[in-house]
Amino acid sequence: MELALRKQKILSAIVESYIRTGEPVGSKTLLAEAELSVSSATVRNEMAALTDMGLIVQPYTSAGRIPTRQGYRYYIDNIMRVTPLSQGSRDYIESRLYESSDSPEHILQGAADLLSELTGYMALATTPGTENSRVHKISFVQTGSHTAMAVVIVSNGIIKSKLFRCEFLITPEILEVFDKALNKLFVGVKLESINRPFIQTAAAKFGELSLLMPGVLMAISDAVQKAREVNVCRSGQTNILHMPDVNFLTARNVIEFINNTHDLATMLEKLPPATSVKIGRENSRIELSSSSVISARYNAADTLSGVLALVGPVRMDYGKMIAVIEGVSDCVSGIIGELVEIQ
Image 1 (spheres, rainbow, N blue to C red):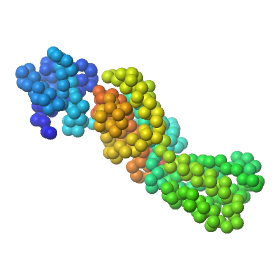
Image 2 (spheres, rainbow, N blue to C red):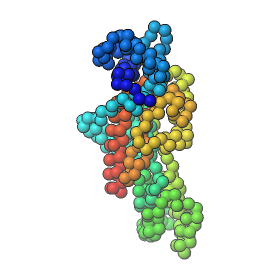
Image 3 (cartoon, helix red, strand yellow):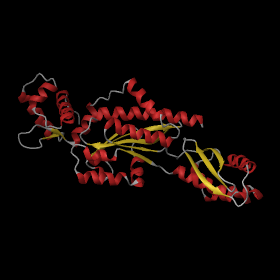
Image 4 (cartoon, rainbow, N blue to C red):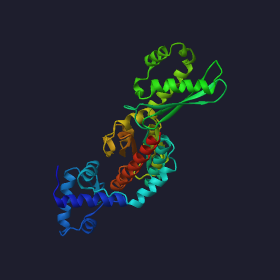
């Protein structure tokens, strides 16, 4: 469906005025805001046509018009213009994110907190995907006479650790042997390839040395499995209780779903690679049928990775929210990229 220019101007004015005020928009307001050199009768006829197309609706008799979900969709896809954030705003976002830049998880929690703060909505961020990630390095830290920690550093920046215990006395020399042997074996291996058969084969390769390594190998395996799990950082969950046009039951259902990490991560990972807006029932989850979800992906190790998302009401300033989430996503990509290079 393609609208003539005048209809586009009227729809745009209705959407933007309703987003700003929450009030139905009448013909007199449209004449002023859409800058149309036509009569009120002409505007009313155009509004009637847009109503017949399902793009706007009259909520009650004698009221103006408000956009429908279809009207929002047309506005976002065909009319809306997104103005990128100013350099000053980007500098502020970057400085805030650098405050928690010691690991991808902390960066992403900082990004979710900042998104929620800047928008007033619920914000989500998933940790980097591991589909093509490999072991970058394995380190060991002694924690006791018989205990040490295996630290697995992944190519996407994720760091996971697991404590292990040995029956024999652990010395720096033994840890050095572990370091050399296990880095030679594991570095460069895809995480998805490190499973029980791989560990069994690895143990066999070490011969007599394998007698010292069962606990170490299992610790590395467990750390790798933890690194493969997609975690979700959340912020501003209770903001939905104060959003326009959202009742208590809807808010409760959204919060319950957001706290279901497995289902939430599954939904977020299925979102498109490009910046996306899902309105109401366009969302794959019924709990979000009265909400809008704006998402953008960030890069880790030069590949599309995790997701940043905003969950808010259908009546939101989409252009502004897209600019914010894309700005934060760009900064997250840069900072995680630097972190991966350092490691």
